Image 1 (cartoon, helix red, strand yellow):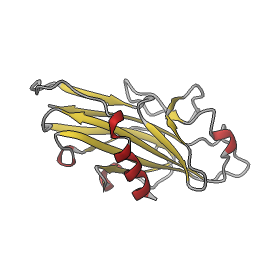
Image 2 (cartoon, rainbow, N blue to C red):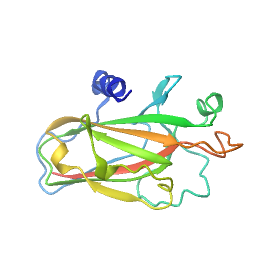
Image 3 (spheres, rainbow, N blue to C red):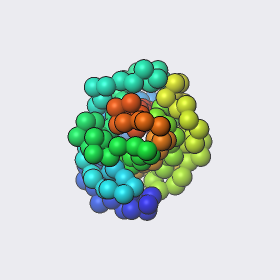
Length: 181
């Protein structure tokens, strides 16, 4: 499943966000959850679309990540892909003009999350527990980034909820990537 998403990510590399051509030296380049994040639903039905900034904010989503927004496929796809359990595959392409001196992802998800940077699973940026939406988490990805195009992918799994619907039990992601170059 992840191989399919990574292959799809490589095909879509033309959507990458570019940075200045020269290394700015000590400048933070920021990438946040927004429509430039590609979303693929699944696992039974695959629909690719830009992620949508959420208009519905669940009361349990208290994680604060300044500059970012909760994203999903709201409302177009979720209605037809109701629980019991949903998966969303998010991909963000970033382009770095030079090697970063530091790079972090700050994230929150409803519910569990796996993170991949350039195809490599990052356990420090992943959490298979339930409450990943109450507080932001942070991890270092500097060693995984390269000069030029990079692909960051997330698999967000929303656990089944008895009597749940896409509105009462949504699958969402929020992130900010800061790379100092």
